[in-house]
Length: 79
Image 1 (cartoon, helix red, strand yellow):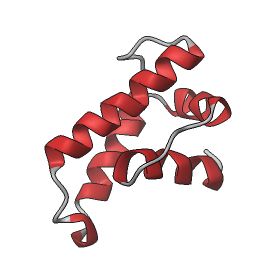
Image 2 (image 1 turned 180 degrees about the vertical axis):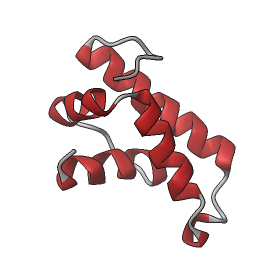
Image 3 (image 1 turned 90 degrees about the vertical axis):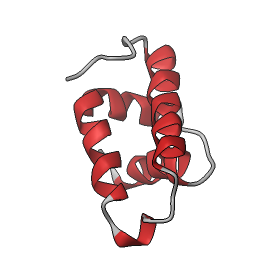
Image 4 (image 1 turned 45 degrees about the vertical axis):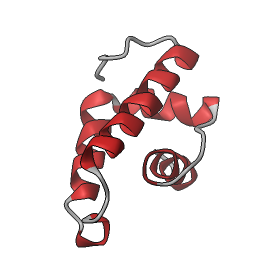
């Protein structure tokens, strides 16, 4: 995944933002397992210790599901 798309996905989960169709395509290539691992690893960083894990999990699922609907992949798909 290119850095601009990684930044988009990160922002959509840990801040506020949307993911473009192009970046949804890159996320699809990585797959759900990598997407989930990225979120889990980020939450392990002390910088993010004060974030609500349940809120982040919801935003993570929303990002994946939105991309799934835009790119036509199943919500639980994995590459």
